[in-house]
Length: 294
Image (cartoon, rainbow, N blue to C red; front, side, top):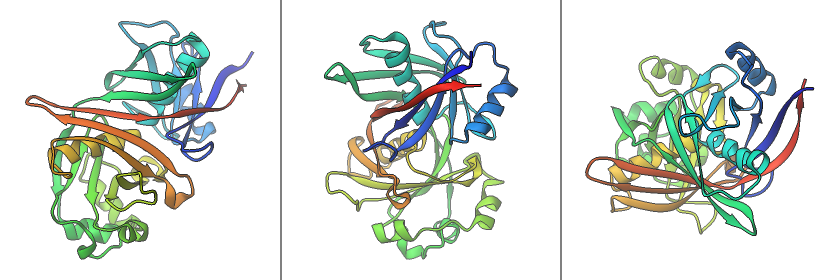
């Protein structure tokens, strides 16, 4: 008998458009080395392993691996794993499921449409704000002119579990033109906790969306990611911290992946409160395939 797994598509506006993920069941007997080897062979940006199908200390223990390393947290693996737990393991409607990840407990709430999961929302950790960067330095890394960067707001490192550099641009043209200078990029991340850059602008491909985003993650082993829940959680914290929309709260639609031909949709809700910033990232999940790994 092989190891059962599922392929799910997270944040996708249509099948095979978002960020695909492999979710493995019955992983309690696997060593860290075996999980890492499987994640490398699956070769998705992340692969998750459900360690127990019974809650432990209030949540389901889950581990997340890229082809190169284990991660303390990642957005689309969290939502994709909760979808598998609800649909394939629990088999009944349930309002919320909590995952026990290395970063801590991440609760996910589920809304339904015609008895099937509609939107899954994860509550991320309150964002932590790190160092800021010179506009010209990041512009050079992105092969852009400094005038294409939006200098009304800082370029800053933000983390809700995994850190990202958040950089605002003025136009969609600049977003499309961005290309990473890998030599400069890898030199930069030698001095930063963040190993990836999220760029965004207020012009979008679809009029119903509020922001367009790209994520360059060479430092995490992915040249460009089509849909990134952890990065967009950092973005949500950044937007309310700096009142990008003129308010300390947001409820917006973010598009990502269009430049890769994989259009994705992420929903962001965040509020700045006296003691913390509450961040929620939502999206839809589609089951693509299931099988056994032998």
